[in-house]
Image (tube, rainbow, N blue to C red; front, top):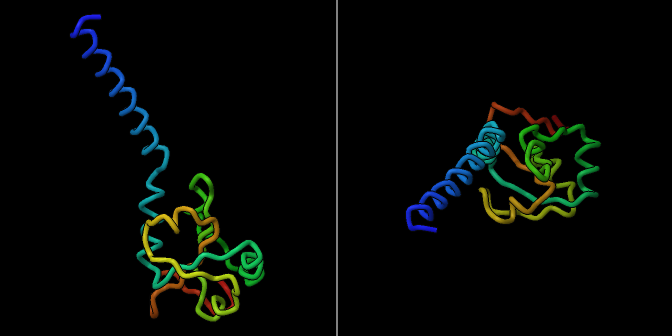
Length: 125
């Protein structure tokens, strides 16, 4: 294979990879931007276990649809401070797109005080 043929082969490989990346980005339909927006609206983030998810579900708090669009799906819920205090497994994590957040399956967020975009009553959403 000549040098020119090698360059063309490498260029084709890069184009295939770039096309795959664009396809992935387009299929995501901005879900990562929406998840980041959820984190901006939050004052704190917490990881909970599956048993506590049942407590949150019983309170009528539904997961945010954007977290469910991720693969694997991530249950992200906004809860009040009162509901959070009833969750024994809660573990605080840094607010942001960090390893703890990305690895967690069940995340609860507490909105900023006075935040009006997502009203979260004490009993649920």
